[in-house]
Image (cartoon, rainbow, N blue to C red; front, side, top):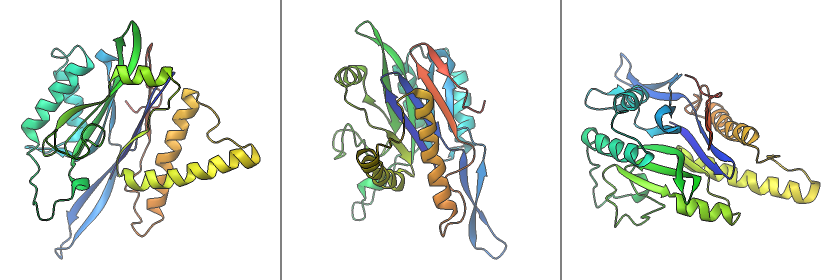
Length: 269
């Protein structure tokens, strides 16, 4: 399992990802068990674009089943002559994934719209818009686009699509109005969202009753630590659960992107 987070703030973009990869193996008696590898680079820098990209879902890309992070690193490097913008990169990645990831087959009788997606990527960085460097985010994935087409009637959910979830005009408008943009969670996001919604309500009550504000600041460095805390907390919850293994876990990689470039001080390179 995986947990990746991306947040856009007025001062910059923060991306965070765990580094655990859950794999299965067959025991001599025929039973299937699983184990967890750590050190997977789910968050990477696209140096040419001063951007970041993180991945959730399938741990290997067919037909050779190359580990996804290694495949992505190779893609970023080998395609560098074919992209000059985030949009270029998103479309090229979409098309390449469509070549390798077969369409999801859906049994209409057992169709569950929430469980379609098998692979996805957060692609975030800055573009020039209205004379200003403005953040933008693409979510390149198969499955339902809950932001752009929650009913799955306009965008084919069975194939990979380069969904421009947060275009620069929308981001610029909301930031100028002081509207907080959503925290993007993917991978094993549902439990994390429920847990931290409850935690957020508790912290709100602390702020009102005791004057204690958590997290303390919208400073990028401190906010990065807050995202680390969220991933670390979920890792520990799984480790202490009946699952026992840290299926979200390993080193937590983080990335800060500002109009001036990328700060990869929290990234394993």
